[in-house]
Image 1 (spheres, helix red, strand yellow):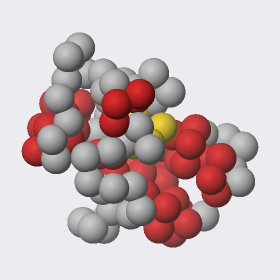
Image 2: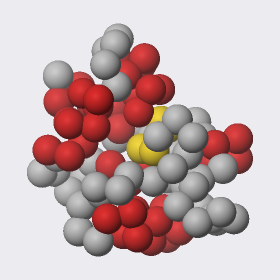
Image 3: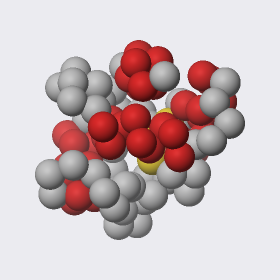
Length: 95
């Protein structure tokens, strides 16, 4: 199941985000926590886990390395602008 999650996350375009729920729905998974578990366990450098946020657009508190600050830096490097700290505008940047 984790490999399916990684494969889907790789399809999220640069400068866009998806929610855990969107990923789960696309893969037919009912428990969105499983998406978080998969992303937390990711060891592949080519899987852009930073492009997955919660249903409100909030960044992940437990994101690797420097937590949500690192996730925000990675998204900003792709052109995402934060108007409210730690939240992505899903209408503007969501897939």
